[in-house]
Image 1 (spheres, rainbow, N blue to C red):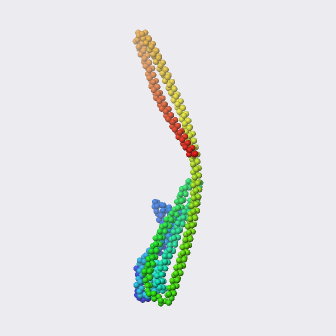
Image 2: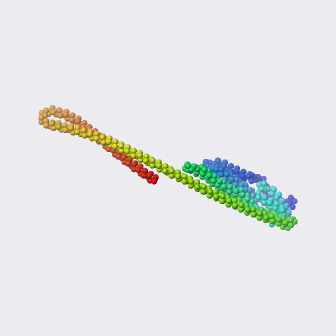
Image 3: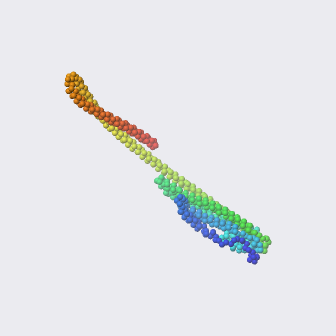
Length: 495
């Protein structure tokens, strides 16, 4: 008997809302992921110069761009599943199955039809959830007139199937989790190859900045891809755990709310003549299907494990080959660099020896020039001193001659004292005049003495100049000793 004849209310009591489905916004996760990636690159292009390192890492190579695009595709997949989880939780909160409203309906088919009809009042956003889907599955199963025991088994089977579907639904995300690091590793290998081709073996010193920059550019996409894969892995774990909890709640909903709607006497099923045969056939089908699914799952896991082992072996072999090639290239590079260092050292020592010889030659020339100047200065000083001595000797002789003459005249005057006493007055006058003349001569002698003092001062100044020349000679000798020590050290280093 239907609810239309009994006047029963619909068996699902929920508030009637007219809302759109947010899941409809993400029509395709691939398109949504590319849109998110484009928005991300637009956002990092607007970053300030202080955050330019982010743009350098994400825009540095095509591998980083590809890894970023795959990451946002995975984010779009997880976002779509998270939106579905939000709708499932909302459906679990809003949908309440009232088993008492079906008391007047005896036929299982009518009860199932009543439940299906009641779900038509659900908004479109909730109508597409797993909760409503579980109600539809149970109603279609009950429409086959199966027993209550087989209904519970069917609910458990649906729960197991939902868990398997959950594992398969993350296949694309798992593929992306493997693909993003693979893209980063490919970018690393290509970056190393490009860097090695850019090295100039003839000029390794000039190539070192390019090598360092190439290694940085090669490792950047690998670091970006590993970081993005870790973020995607944690997001996948969070969404998977949340969906597992929602599936557990849906299973409890089916057992506690949907199954009691069909909890009636087992004898009511005996009206159908083929009910037992159908139940047995259904059980056989379920067991065979379960065995087939289990066997297929085991084969799938074995194939995936073989693929993973082959991938790991291939990656290890490539890593060993790359390490050997890198070690060989670095050894050749270091050998060439060592040879160039030896050549540069030999050239430096040759130039240093040439500079030392030139410095010794210049020092010898300076020493010889100093000796010549010293001899010339010594000759000049000696000539001046001799001329001064000769002049002083001549002046002294003149002075002695004049003194002798004066003494002779004085003796003659004394002898003639008595003779000329009579002529004293006239003689005194003449003598005074003579004394005046002699005074003038003595004044000239005094002036010559002052000139002699001046000459002595000049001689003292010349002696100081001679001492300065001796100090200069000592400096020249010190410089010769320093040059000799440098030459000895250079020969020791060269040896």
